[in-house]
Image (cartoon, rainbow, N blue to C red):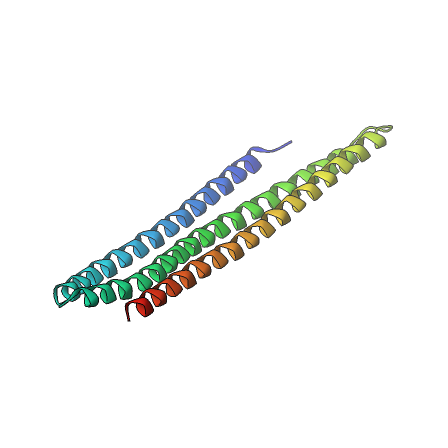
Length: 185
C-alpha cells in the first residue's frame, strides 16, 4: 500500500514536471515570437528598400529585372523561416518527449516493483498466474519500446523529407529566377 508520504511525493513530482513542461512550452513560444519579430523587422526594412528601388526604375525592362531579383531571395527567406519554425517545434517537442519518456520510465519501474512485490507475497499455488502477469507486463513494455522506436524513426524520416522539400523549393525558385533573367536579357 502507498503511504501518505509516497502519495504526497508523487503529487509533488507531478506538479514539478507540469511546471517544467509549461516552462519548456513558454520557451518555445518565446523563440517563436522572437523569430516573428525578426522577420517583421527585416520585412519592413526590405519593403522600404524595395519601394525606393521601384521608385528609381526608369523603364519596363529595369522593372522586370528588379522584380526577378526580388523573387529568389523571397523564396529562400520563406524556406529559412520554415526551417526556423520547424527547428523550434522540433526542439520543443524533443524536450517534452524527453520528460514524458523519463516519467514513463519512472512509472514503469514503480509498476514493475509493485508486480515483483505482489509476486513475492502471492499465496502458494499462484505461480502460474504470477508468471502470466509478469509475461504480460514484459510484452507491454516491449510493445511500448517498439512504438517509441517507430515514432523516433518516423520523426527522422519526416525531418529528412522536410529538408528535401525545402531544398527542392529553393532550387526551383533559383532556376525560375535564372530563366526569367536570361529571357529578359
